[in-house]
Amino acid sequence: MSLVNRSIHIFAPELVPMIKCRKVDRLDALMSVSSTTSFVPFVLAAAITQVVLELFLYGAFAVLFSAVVYLFWSRGLLAKNRPIFLVFLALVVLFLSVTGHMINTVYALYFAFVHLGGGVAAAVFYLTEASPTDMADISFVAIVIIITDSLVIHRLYVVWSCNYRVVIFPLIILLVQVASGAHVIYDLAVSTQVDPGALFTPWVITSYGSSLIVSSYSSAMLSYKIVSMSRYLRRLTGSATAGKRLMRILVIMIESSALQASPEFM
Image 1: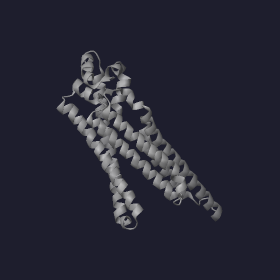
Image 2: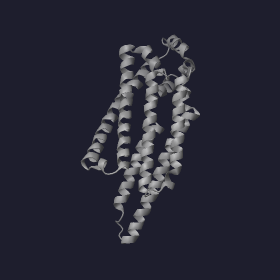
Image 3: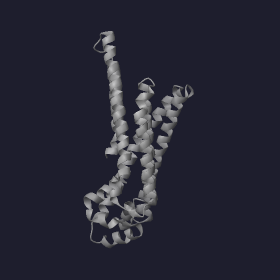
């Protein structure tokens, strides 16, 4: 619930020391300031905005996933070799994880406004970083990032003609990412405090930073390989237009990597 947490730091910084307390005391602390602070509208507005944006983006993602499934099925790619089937299986798990995140976000909104009746109680619910819905949210995000990074590494491996030496470094970083992500989820599960600064612990920074490293390294190596192939084709054929298709592919790969890395920056 990044939008909600960010709204607290921007619009209600006076709440930060109050919610940095034991879980059993947090509700009383927030209720005691409910009559003197205007944080509730901002928290609830951020929650509604998050749901609207996620539903919109999920629709686009579902359309793209359906197109990919159709291409895999119509061209018989699933029956040809096992690596492609594994890639397709990873895409299915990715889609299910994104769907689970979307359902969890909508359920959190329903729980806050229907079950809790909105108001201060709903704002307190959204501020509970170790709540079951928030735990599910973080878990789904971790799964999605790990799968997308794995697909990027696989793409790098294929473009570099299955040269395993090229992917050793990103694979090591991916293992670091898995370990740090698991540690973040564990810390939230066993924590007896709720601290907004928990989003900036070394483990969280390591998790997101390792994902950015994988994306940056893979994009750089893909760019180098495709540009080198394009130059080789121009020298081989003597044509200035040779390799233009490869450059278009490079642009698509860079754009997709930028879209993948954007959640980490946000």
